[in-house]
Length: 345
Image (cartoon, rainbow, N blue to C red; front, side, top):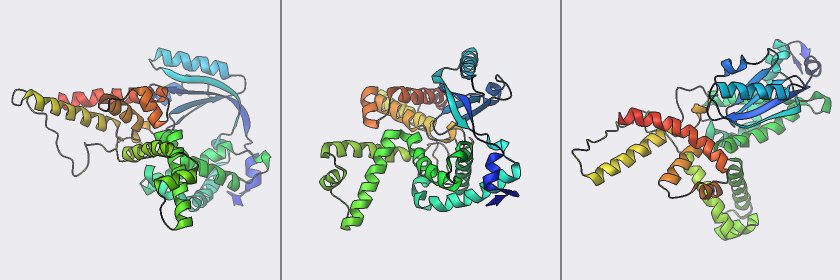
């Protein structure tokens, strides 16, 4: 393969993968990346993974502690709380921009087409999170660039084979990032077991048959099935605002209705505001957190407010940590306050 006049094997040598120090962290709300990058020297790169809400600061070996201290100081000065901040050494990465532009362009065009063909069998999973064709194309391009940054040519594995292995993992990360790794993996295992049983017996399994096929007790299967059902319900989360069929929500005058009816209206108002606050923002860029539904924030608020569950119980039901729930719930709270102000005046 030749891209931009450079053989593929030679192209990787023009920008070899190198070790670097990295700082990982999350924040209570999204950082202004341009301002944050300005706090570091020019050779430091800052990236943000919208999927898992993780910020990464990469620099030369030996600068990890210094970058961590700079990050803490900048966030504290500007009023941002960090979560799980830690430096890491020996992270092997390359910057795609260091490759010759013509080589990188040709390589990405070729492997984006290859990736789309390989992902056809996973398209139903991808469509759950990326219904628009342009979004799918952009996500695949991002995955190819991510593989370029991680590919180690010294291991002797062709880039195409490495990319194929990573794609199969990153597809399932879409669900893991949106709904929690354990819950998404549970759903994936159930779907695979049902498909395998159906192919073998030409019918769908009963509850007992599926439990036996997966090597689980019926009680465990029921608990996991409830988690899967919760995920399916959350996928349907949509804003009550937008859309051609949207109906104006009118708050009744408390002087004209009985107290019990007003109480129901207030609850409806809160439910409406919460759903709208956690739904995707259609004006946000796809790589921004606001462009994705805040399902954990919605579930935490709704089920602890109206469902009568504690965060500990909900954490067990959804197979995620209380800390993760708190991060998403705090983000929902900020948007909820704005929504209530808009709706209630």
